[in-house]
Image (cartoon, rainbow, N blue to C red):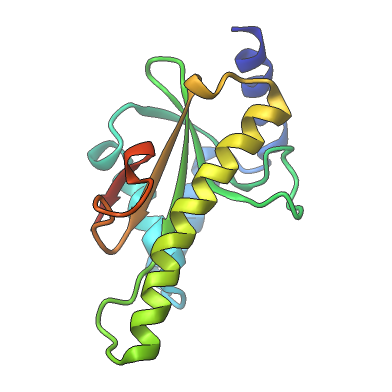
Length: 160
């Protein structure tokens, strides 16, 4: 598929960090943890094969569909899969320890938001690059099981 090849070639140009540099970045996150979301992303980066075994090549990290950090929305991870598909992965740290009505509301908002984000990004990547929707997979990685959520049948949800 020509559009997919064009997109992969584009990613290789706009992703300024090599896989080794991204690995060093995440090693630093683990050594000096200060943000739960980044820590979750680091965990997924180092364990990608355990959760999403078809992912073989990190194309973009924290980039929008056009490769810039714009208002289009950034996707946490964009991978090329072993079977020639694109996988979009959004991560969300959901604080399951805090209690109270405000925290329950916040958790519910985070659950819904991560699913909405990845499905909206699928549309944006498809329209920006003219990649058929059927070649783009949506995944979420959170700290809570989201398989029973609305629209969860459209995404692959994994959690730790």
